Image (cartoon, rainbow, N blue to C red; front, side, top):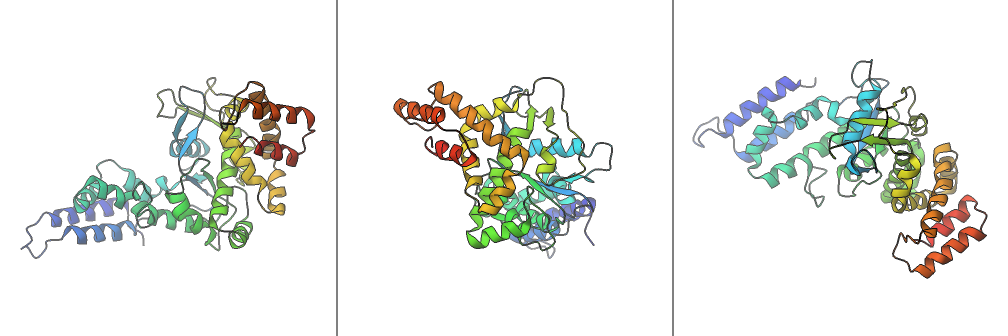
Amino acid sequence: MPLTIEQVNAQAAEIDARMQLPSSDPNHLSFSDGRIALFNLADQLDVSIPPGASAVFYSGPFRDVGGGSTSVHSGAIAAEIVDRANTGNPPATRLITLDQTALGQVLSADNSSFLVALQRATQTPAEFTRALQGSANGDGVSDSLFGRGSARFAAAATGPSFGLTGHASDLRVWRQVEVAALLNNPDGGTINGISRQDLVALRTSRDMQAVVDLLNAVSGVSSLRGVSFQAPDGQNVTSVRVKADFFPEMGISGIPDIHGAPGGHTSSTIRMRENATALVGWLDTIDAAPPELREQLLARGGLRSSYHRANQILEIRANQNIDLTGASTVATVFVVSAFAAVLFSTRDAIAVRRQMI
């Protein structure tokens, strides 16, 4: 039986008090033993996903060009999407992130008894961060509280799930923990609209990095085309707009349209143009997928549209002598000539894009 948030905070307060007792006291708890006790407590918090709900993952920045901000953390976008998707229904009944589970609430609450005790047990800010989420260099991520919780959360995902991970770092929990847990979950559904079986086959034929790269590429292209936000102060997301076909293409059904606040949202064409370098990389990753899987992805109207629109954007940039990769003006002119001479099929377009990388 999972512990409640109240029970965990009460027991954490007791652990904190015992760590402050004199070492001669028989109830004294050392810092190292206190840390172990807190980790064991966290493992008893609920991370289950309600029946019918889809798990949402996020990692890294989410980039846009409007609303007074070019980048916010993807977690802020995920929180707004989840909140809007669940409007009019009990919380987390349609979409849910780890943050909404009992564990996520305890680990994210400012000055909770649990985190106060963890600060004492770890003694330094660096060790506190490492215990909570791992170091910036990736050290300890899988063994951290968020790492352990994320593995449990991904293992609990039985329906379709998706991630906002286009700009995710390989040093964070998505790459280090969550993707592997999703693939190893025999009851897991699709991820970003791709079947678990296809992703396991890709891991077997290539490696885990190929799986992560493909999931990130699909997320990046789909999010860039389908999701926009407003964050006037550069941090707090005030509005998110999601195109109607975003959720179905990511394998999620039953989510109402998310229109966002009127005005202030940039068009997908502008977002693609301003993020063209990342878009090229994502589309090349998709193009390099196994043929059958690649064709499945390109059957999605949004991804197929992104190919054609990316070609137009890159041609405009080339005509403006804006070089995405440090190539010379001569090389840029060569690419313009190639665009003028080639009638683009999808593969032809990829070939020309690669000349610009």
